[in-house]
Length: 110
Ligand code: SF4
Image (cartoon, rainbow, N blue to C red):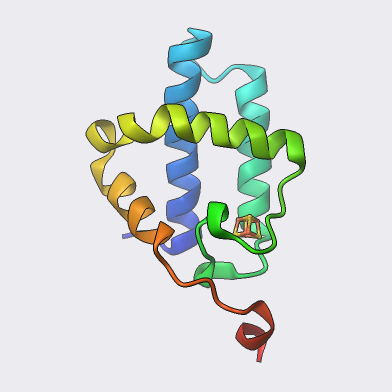
C-alpha cells in the first residue's frame, strides 16, 4: 500500500493529530504539533536505515533531540491505544515494525 517511510509518515501524522485533537482542542494541528510533525517527517526523510529502518523506539542511533524524543514518546503513549480503533491497519503495521530485527547499519550499507 505505502512504502515504509511513507507509511511511517502517515502513522506519525495520525498519532500527532489524535494527540492534538484531544489535548489542545483545535480543529487543525496547533503550531507546536505542526512543528513536531515536520520534525518527525524530516527525520524519516533522512533516516540512515531508509526503508529497512527499525521502529524508532528500538533504534540504536535515535536521531531525535532529547526534547523531541520525550514529546514523541508522550504522543505515542497517548495516541497508540486509540490508533487500534481509528486506524487499525497503520496500528497493526506499527506493532509489527516494533518486532523487526535491528540491522547493523554498517552491514546494511555494504
Ligand atoms: S530514530 Fe532511528 S529509525 Fe527513527 S528516524 Fe531516527 S535514525 Fe531512523
